[in-house]
Amino acid sequence: MDWKTVMTREIVFDTETTGFDYAKGDRLVEIGAVELINHVPTGVTFHQYINPERDVPEEVVKVHGLTYDFLKDFPTFDKIAKDWLDFIGDAVLVAHNASFDMNFVNYELKQIGFPEIGWDRCVDTLEIARLLFPGARCSLDALCKRFEIDNSSRTFHGALLDAQLLSEVYLELLGGKEPSLLLDAKKTEKKVTFSDNMENKNYREPRVFNLSDEELLKHKEFLETKIKDALWNS
Image (cartoon, rainbow, N blue to C red):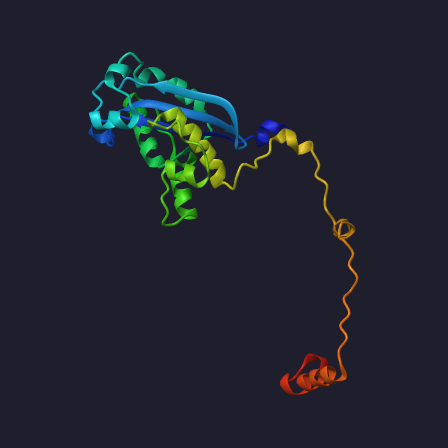
């Protein structure tokens, strides 16, 4: 079988915006993404700042640090849309609170006449975390702390850094960093059998208990009077 036919490609991504509501004019200002093949990071990334063609509120700048003065010299979304779509291809998309990122991306695509990305190809790590840890805080920072992932460099929200952290969180949510590359399929593991275990056991002499006649009699009386319908009497 061709290894390409069983390859699973996923894109873990994050966005930064001018606010919370695309319907009220908020726009994308940054997209960051990392590629996973069979749950293994490949080192391939996508990162792009975007000119939102509008101001960035001061309270939002405090979150991601991106001012309009910084962003105005970067391309608008219509100039980078094809590069983004080419990068993601038909891969599964993984995001934290995916409805937020997907709604913004699809809104931007719709404005320039591109087809929207289907929700059926999206995985929401926030939903997974809430199922696994009901009642617990499930922000990206909280999950990094839970899984002991170093996020000390996250002084601001940044799309690429957050995507990289989320890729580590995602693998932990799937059960830990134990994915295997197809190249490892040729490796064989030694099976441990019962006889192997017995060979490694240290032999100990059985212990002998010397009971007096009185103790044996009391034990017999106990079995006959205290235990009804004993299996050994049937």
